[in-house]
Amino acid sequence: MTGGAAHDGPTGTGGAAHDGPTGTGGAAHDGPTGTGGAAHDGPTGTGRVARDAAAAEGAGAKPARTGRGGPQVVWIGLVLVALLAAFSVLAPRAFPTSFNLLNLVSDAAILLLLATGMTFVIITAGIDLSVGGVLVFSAVVAAKVTEGTGSAALGAAGALVTGLAWGVLNGVLVALGRIPALIVTLGTLGMSLGGALLLTGGVDLRAPADLNLGLGLARWLGVPLIVWICAAITAALALALAFTRFGRHTYAIGSNAEAARRAGVAVRGHLIKVYGLAGLLAGLAGHLSLAKYGITGVSAHSTDNLQAIAAVVIGGTSLFGGVGTVTGTVIGVFIPVVLQNGFQILGVRPFWQQVVVGAVLVAAVYLDQWRRRARDQ
Figure 1 (cartoon, helix red, strand yellow):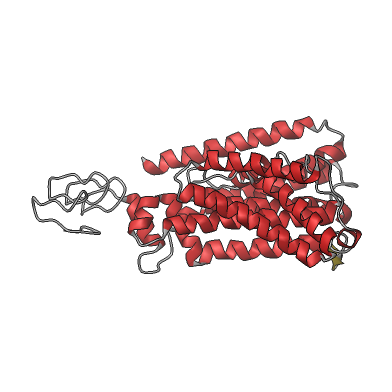
Figure 2 (tube, rainbow, N blue to C red):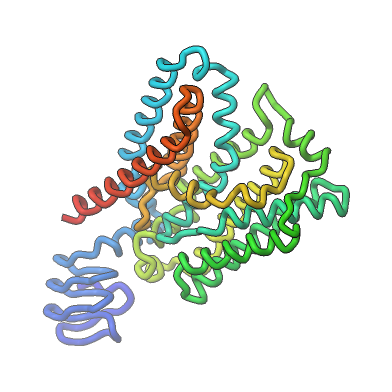
C-alpha cells in the first residue's frame, strides 16, 4: 500500500490524510479502494492531479506533454496563417509589403512582453489585472529618473525596479496574504494608475530626446531594436517555461497547488517569483513604450491588461491553470494585431475588430472547457 507522506495499516489513520483498504482520505492518500481527491491514490484510486505534480517534479522528471497545449497551438497557428493569407489576397498591394509587416511586429512587440508575463501567471491558475497600470507607473518613473539624472540607463533601471516591486507586492498578497489574485491585482491596478496620475498631475510626460531618438528609433538589420529586445526576452522565457525546473513548477502549481506542495515545490515562494516576473516585464514594457512613443501615455494603456489576457487565452493557455505555452501566446498576440491592421487597410470600421476579437476569445474559452470535460470523462 502507498501513502505519500505517511502510511497506515489496514485500519489505521495517518494524521488527517491516509486510510486503510476501505477508508477514504479526504484530501490526501487512499488505500486500494479509496479515492484521493487532491493527492495520491492506491492501486485503483484516481489521483490525476497528484500524478501530474509528481511528474512535474518528483525526481526531476518533466511534466506530461498534455500540459503544453500543443494541438491547440497548431490550430491557432493555422488561424493566423489563414488571416495573413486572406488579407494578402484582399489587399495585395498594401498588406503583404515589408513596410506593413514591419509595422505589425512593431505594434505587437510591447504587448508581447505583457502577455508573456501573463502566460506564467495564468498557468499557475492566477490572473494579473495590474500590468497596464504598472506599465504606466514604470514609464513615469523612467521619465522622471532620466530627466533628473540625465542617464537613460538609470531611467531603465528605475522602471525595472518599479515594475518588479509592484509584481512582488502582488505575489506576496496572493501567496502569503491568501487574497484572491483578481482582487489583489484589481487593487494594485488602481493604485499604480492613481500613483502615476499623482506623480504627473494628470499630464503626460515627454521622454527625453536622447531616449526617444536613440532607443526609440534605433534599428538593427532594418528591424527596430525594441522588436529585437522583446523577441529575445520572449524566446528566453519560452525556453524557460518549457525546459527548466522553474517552468515545471509553474505547470505543477497550476495543475494543483496542494499536490505540488506535497511533491516538494515551494508554492508560495514560486508564486511570488511568477508575479514578480510579470511585474518586471511590465516595467520593461513601460520603459520601451516611453522610448517608442515619446510620452508616458497615462491614459493610453487602460486596456492593456485585457489585451494581454485575451492574447494568452486565444493562444491556448487555460484559465484553469496547468496548460499553456509562450509560443501559443505569441500567436495569440498577433491575431488581434493582424485583424486590426487588415481592417484598417480594407477600410472596415475599427469597431468590427473588437467584435471579432471578442468572439475569438469566447470561442477559445469554450474550446478549453470542452477539452477539459472530454479529458475528465
